[in-house]
Length: 134
Image 1 (tube, rainbow, N blue to C red):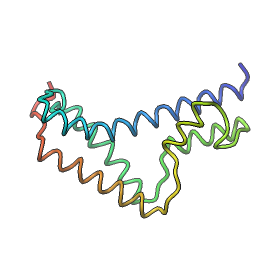
Image 2 (cartoon, one colour; image 1 turned 90 degrees about the vertical axis):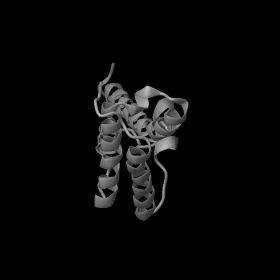
Image 3 (tube, one colour; image 1 turned 120 degrees about the horizontal axis):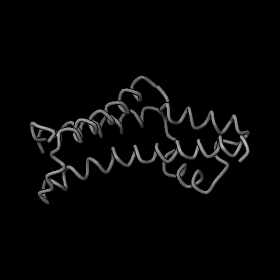
Image 4 (spheres, rainbow, N blue to C red; image 1 turned 60 degrees about the vertical axis):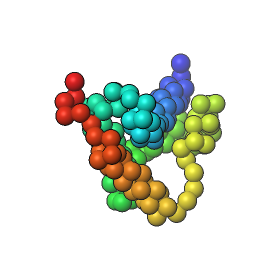
C-alpha cells in the first residue's frame, strides 16, 4: 500500500468516526426520549447520559469559540498530505462529506448546536438518569 493510500485510508477512518460521533449525539437524544416512552432502561444509564452530555457540550463550546472540530482538521490535513482534494477521493469520503459538511453562516451553526444542547440538557430533567451507572 502506498503512503498516499494509507493517508487516505486514515482520513476516511477519521471521517467515519466523525459521522459516528454525530450519529451518537443526534440519535442519542432521540433514543432518550423514545426510550422513556418505550421503557428502555438503558437510556437511563448514567454513563451513557454523561457521555452524551459531554459530546454535545464539546460541540456547543467549539461553536461558540469558533473552533473547527479537530476531527475535521486531522482529516483534511491527511487528505492534503496525500495530495488529494478535500472533497475528492473514495466513495465513503464523498457520501459522508455530503452528510457532514454543508455551508451556512457560523451563527446558524452556533444557534443550532446550542438549541440541540438545550434539548439534551432538558432531557436530564424530563428523563432523569438513574443515580448509579450500573
